[in-house]
Length: 86
Image 1 (cartoon, rainbow, N blue to C red):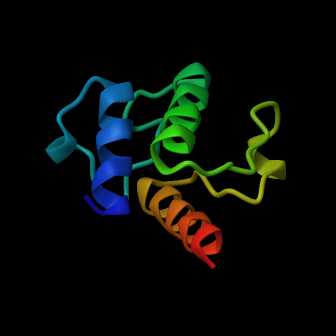
Image 2: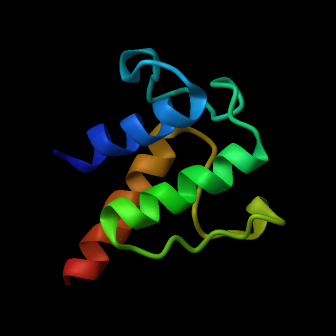
């Protein structure tokens, strides 16, 4: 399973949606994911990919990890996975 598919599954699970309902351009807010859901999503992503997401839950704007859309989250996870393999 590729990174994009797995990240979408994790986000869909948090939003209580089908993965097919999650679009790359969606923000987490549009999907109904609140701050607690965001943190739970980050934990699930870290566990699924055995990575550490540089995310500041208290101030997401201060993070190097862009959570503005599903596409940005996927890109960030792909980058972290690639860095881990390097």
